[in-house]
Length: 114
Image 1 (cartoon, rainbow, N blue to C red):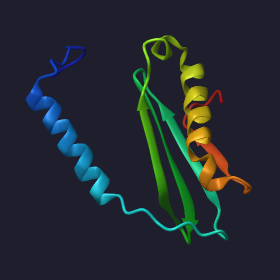
Image 2 (image 1 turned 135 degrees about the vertical axis):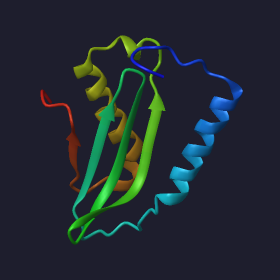
Image 3 (image 1 turned 90 degrees about the vertical axis):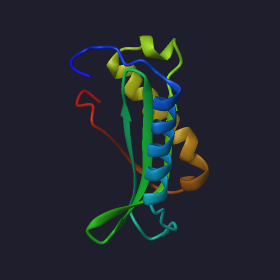
Image 4 (image 1 turned 90 degrees about the horizontal axis):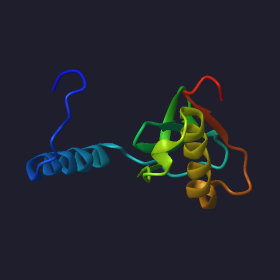
């Protein structure tokens, strides 16, 4: 597929996508939370979905504790880029709240205006 050519969603394409998602989930080894470690949430938003990862610092690298993603509703896809990024942050905080409630967590986004 080149440029802005549409991708036709076929059953084979959906199956391949699901297989990729399962393979990624198996590779991502989640760590047990360490109450002494620094915790962060990294978020991102696209035109069609939002996602986030809750991580803790372990020495010089980050360990994932939990992942979150969801497809945007038709109304959410009409949001500006700023609003989609804010929606990603808000949704991630709500989703992970039960894990980090009562402790300090820093949120990072790749959206420079925020």
